[in-house]
Image 1 (cartoon, rainbow, N blue to C red):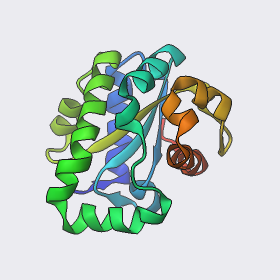
Image 2: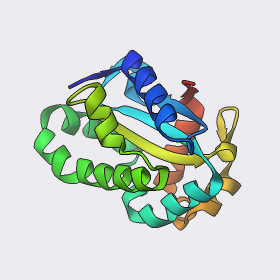
Image 3: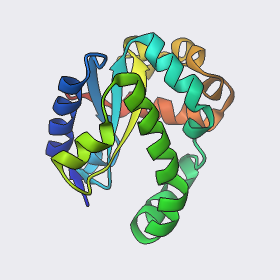
Image 4: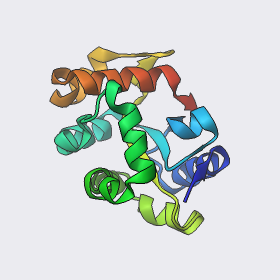
Length: 169
């Protein structure tokens, strides 16, 4: 099931409405680039304490495993080897979303499914100060969790995200 930019906009509104902990939401990834994607990649802007707790608890679930040079392979796997994607990536994504749901007091997967059955999202929790314009605030981000401070591919992912993400609401 594909997700459109309009879907991402509607889901952002529903998420923000469902949780008082979400200040605003930003979109990045394939839906932003192409208007259509396998999932909507969302940055949920929350209080720093919530973001810190999520990053610390999710640690290894958030570490980028396929760096920039592997992005074409990642896209191939998502498109043509969906069973492998399900086994490797979706499990981690599900665990991240489940913990974010607990911290934010909203069942994110249920909300998404009620809006559009089969649709998927991927989310990341950040504090308001996570970036300045199009540049990540690495001192803030590195203070959230060791995986950011100690893992080059994760930092590169955050740099790409900061550069491209746009505010939806």
